[in-house]
Amino acid sequence: MRLKIAKESLLNVLSHVVGAVERRHTLNILSNVKIQVTNELLTITGSDLEVELVASMPLTEGACLQVGETTIPARKLVDICKSLPTAALIDFQITEDQRCILKSGNSRFVLGTLPAEDYPLLATENAQGTEVSVTQRELKRLFEKTAFAMAVQDVRFYLTGTLLEIDQTQLRAVTTDGHRLALCETAATSTATQAVQAIVPRKAVGELQRLLSVEDEQLSLLIGRELLNVTITIANRDKEQGDITVRFTTKLIDGKFPDYRRVIPRGGDKIVMIAHDVFKQSLQRVAILSNEKLRGVFLNFNADSLQLRANNPEQDEAIEDLAIQYADASLEMSFNAQYLIEVLSVLDGDDVSITMTEANQSVLVQDPTQQDQTYVVMPMRV
Image 1 (tube, rainbow, N blue to C red):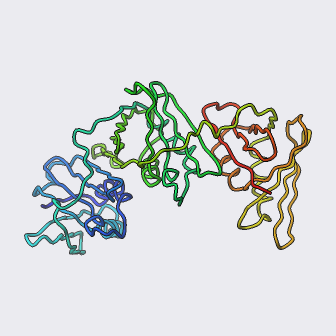
Image 2: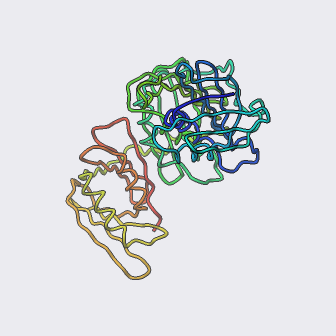
């Protein structure tokens, strides 16, 4: 195999797959990327057996000097490319003894390789499942508005991902860590005849967010029993090169997501309206003097006023008063400040509505102008 390619072009393709590669893995070959070169196409694959990314880019005439395939250490290849000067041309060759020789200017690097046929791939041939059509912009928005509420490490492994729920006209993303819940939905078309659920792992959600753009280009997701598959076309930064096609595949979490509808409080009769930015900034200030571990902040709701209060074992205390729209009985609740701040960070409107029932019950936090986003936060036990 031999290829001559501009450093930027190679890095551009590599950058879309290297996120799937783990630095340390029980299988040495999974620290590598698989590189395939034909006369027309450069294809690079990265995988950790859970998430697989395959990026392809058309080659200019004469770039391929010899077709072939191999696997090369991913991080070393990326670091070498990044260290080369701008506009550097890389001469990329696999020798008969299966060594990779990289030449550029006065630099020469020799890397070890492993056989391409040994590279494990997720079985995507003849994949079947539910097809969902949605725009890149909307799919990216679903993840951005909900990803923060995924559990990080939890024995309830099904909480460490994002639930995608599909029916014929809606695509819904739901996350929860047991203390808060985030839900966002958008219009979509699908081949589903009944509701379909799939739990996408945390790492896969992060990679998808990175790949998706804010374009209105339609995507077709294929959601099977074990895998989710989607192909994304990405405009090349080098206008002289063709677009990059990325095939994204992830294993789904095999588990039963809790019935999130039962968690969403219904019939709340106490509604508060607060200016979004003022509330968020006040929470950030008051939380400075909260207990570093618990991050608890007291919210005392009175007629048209809210008092935020926090203290810590060092006897520090912070108090701040806000004007709000509220006309019900006085109510005091305690929340993890970070949970509220993270919800406010994904709401875009000028105002926030908080719907409450009792002091020890979960509250509903929403942007009054965005009915497709719902957030639930549990109070702390005082």
